[in-house]
Length: 269
Image (tube, rainbow, N blue to C red):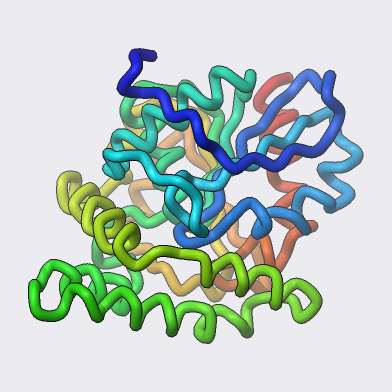
């Protein structure tokens, strides 16, 4: 990777045997830190597996330092460089983290496997509130108000999805987010979705082994044509986790941990 694909200020949390034969990069979703993977990382299917977990907050989110270029394409490049530096041979991403993982394989930066937790394949799939906040953020008279309001509302909207014992810590991380960063990062994210229309052909065309994982009550949508395209793709497996919404690894950490262990170990046999 060239210098433009490097970033040197990552918030990292690791677990598992230091000498494990498999190393897996975990990318949290938008606004979230590595703390959102904590319960999943401690779940028995992973703690008992020969897997080293390397969780890294997507730079700029949860108050972490941001790169100058916050396009999804640049995130994919710098994250692939990070994965290579840390010897990671599989990537798990949630939400926007899943979209970054998808672009890592779609853009030829990483060969997979990837486990995509609640990715977004097109603009119509995404939260209407997020789309509205991003649109208003581009309006000079409203831009300085839209994202502070969104960041005030987000913890309240997500609180019920968080385990009571973990709720204060996770909500505190959400509150670390910067409105100016979110304004420019989300604008780039929606521009990325608009460039491709649907990301299903990009994922399938990569040939990478991929698992697309969704909660059965996921707030992020999946159109019928997207589902059909994924089901027809021989390198993609669709999985649904019962009793879960968008924060699938927080709501059902054991089930997601088991799926990741099976995917990583099965893909490397």
